[in-house]
Each structure stands twice: as structure tokens, then as C-alpha cells.
Amino acid sequence: MPNEEVLVEILECEQNTQIAHLILNSPETLNSLTLNMVNLISDLLDAWEQDSQIKMILISGRGEKAFCAGGDIRALYDWGKSNDKKATGFYYEEYQLNQLIKSYSKPYASFVNGIVMGGGVGVSVHGAFRVAGENYSFAMPETGIGLFPDVGGSFFLSRLRNNVGMYLALTGSRIKASDAIELGIAEYFIESENYDEIFNKLSEGSSPAEILSSFHSNKINSDLKSNFEEINKLFSGDSLEEIINKLESDQSDFAQKNLSLLKSKSPTSLKITFRQIKNGAELDFEDCMRMEYRMVSKVMSDHDFYEGVRALIIDKDNKPLWKPRNIDEISDETIDEFFKNLENNELNFNTR
Image (cartoon, rainbow, N blue to C red; front, side, top):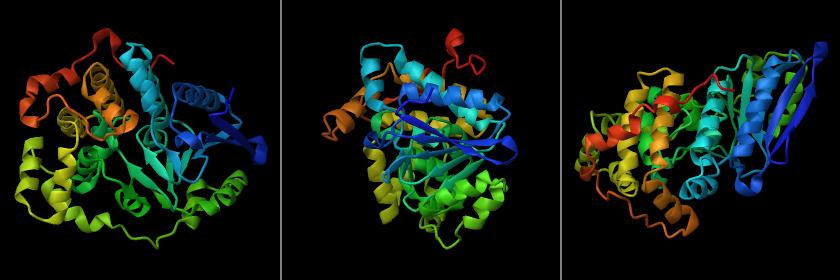
């Protein structure tokens, strides 16, 4: 069943049990998730959940640069441009995988070293155990390509304290391992040179929490923590416009840097992301995923995603021509369209 993009190692354990280790194996693409990878991982997880021999799942990425840099954006662009149903089909399958991991009945541990963005966050952040390595670099940069922070971003980002989730969602800013630990996005900071030893100890039957805690290093400090007060002040509000007004009125370097960042993003993406994070705080995980599927179904028929991918990934001129160009040109009724019920095309978690 495994293919070259996803490798599987089976670790033999005591009492005739096993640990399954998924390895994302496309370092030349920064382990970006393809539709085949999503379907394969889902099929394996479904099978292993029913297999009494398998007691735990591990996931890691091959290569030093990235755990997983997100979904295969270029394929999504091509499918969408040609009206191929795979454009929304990818997200349908990916969001089901996110929910499967979130609700998984067996321990699921992610070992994340290097870049983790978008789809990579979706296959790591929802598991029971979340390990960050020395090169960990987290971001949800989707507003820069006309998208929004999906794969459950509406659930976990909306629950971060000090409005840091809103800040990360709108700006797409990167954070390192110490910041992720401080926020609870990751639980353990463990250098990657220890991963093989940890895998061996897990196969010996010890408690995952005890093993990971014994390797966890507390000798890291969050740089972002010093900005929590500013973030909480600047990124709170009842509208995106209120946040932008706060940034414009604050002459600090931090405020002006983030104002500049927001000005480079898709105005439509910023508007739908603001509402997404606000709504997500009041929804359970499955309803967050249903909302995100409604949103992405509209995004894939809209202008800005294709223009963002063209400018940042295909032509790389970094000069997207967003439509509309300004936030004040976007009505609430336009944003409502991204959240409308899809009736017979809703995301259904009982179809696998």
C-alpha cells in the first residue's frame, strides 16, 4: 500500500504489538501533501485503528528542511483552472483526514522538525502528542495566496490566548519551537538527534508521555511572549477594520511591521479569515471543518487564490493584483457567500 511519497516503518513491540511510523518522503517538494498522500495516510490510519496489533502511530518528515510545507498548491491551481473536481476534492479528503487524526482512538505522535505550514500543520497539530525539533518553523501563510488558514485553523488558532491566533492567521507570521511550546501548538521541545532513541524506547513499552517528558528541554525561551501584550491590544476587536485602525494609529515598529504585512495580503482573504477565527471560537472541531469546507469551496471559484498562486509560486513576481484591491470595497454580503451552507455538498465525516 505505501508508495514512494509516504514510507511506513513498523516497530515491533512487546506482547506482540507494533508501532506504525509514517514518514513523509518527498524532501524535494518539502514533503508537500498530494491527494495520493492524503488518501494513503487516511486509508492506513483507518486500517490501523481496527488492527489490535497496532498500538500507536508516529509521523515525521524526511529531510532537514521541512516536516511538511503544506498541500500541493500548484496541483490545486491547475485543477481549479481547468474546473477539475479534484480542486475541492483534495480539501474534502484532507479535512476528513484532519478530523480522523483529531478523533483517533490510538496515540498519534508528530515529530516536527523544519518547516511546518498549512497541510503539514493539519497532519501534526491535532494528534495526542506534538513534538517540535530545533529547526521547527511554523506558519499559516494562506492569506498571502488568497486562501485562509484551514486544516482546523479555525479551531486551534481561535483558542490561543492573547489574540495570538488572530495575529498568526491574518499576518501569516512564522514562529519557532519555543513560541509553539509557549502557546501549546507543540508540547515538547526535543532535538531531532534524539528521535531514533525515542522510537526505540516507545517500542519497549514505556508510556509515551513519560518518554517524551524525559527528553523535553525547558531551556528555551519564547521571543514572541514579549509581544503578547501588544498582540492582545492590536489584534482584538469586532472587525478587521478595527484591527487595521489600531495598527495605523500605533507608531511602534511592531505595529507598523504588521500593518505592512496586512497590506500585502488578499483583502478578501483577510476579511474571511477574521470571521473564520471569530466563528471558530464558538464551534466544535467538526463544525469548524464544515465551515472551512464551505469557505474553500467558494475560494476555489474566486479570483484571489489563482492570482496569489500565480504571483508567489508560478511567476514569482510577488505582485498579486487582488480583486477587490481594498478592504472597504468588500461588503458583508460578499463575505457571507463564503459561509453559506452547501446543502447536498456539505463535508460529511461518515463517508470513509
